[in-house]
Image (cartoon, rainbow, N blue to C red; front, side):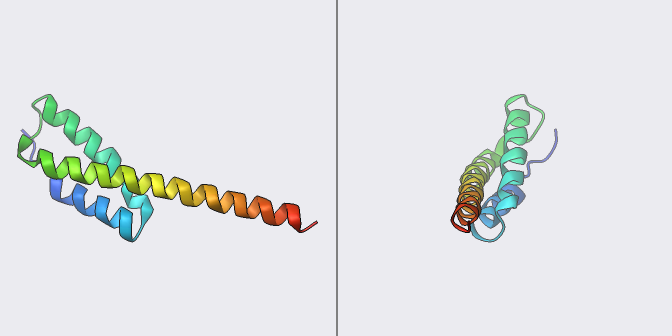
Length: 84
């Protein structure tokens, strides 16, 4: 059985919220894979809570990243329209 990666996933999730939103994507992907492995008995389930918390932080961070990208796109398009 593989050891859990709950702590690194949680750290990536928190850093994805605070510092670099792209780390949130990694936390989301890694957390989903690890929770699947835990459910199938291939990974130590003792880190399930940490992994779940990191995954949730990653999802929120990814959502914030998408929102930032959307705002930037609207701003650039708006500047292009009003610059004429």
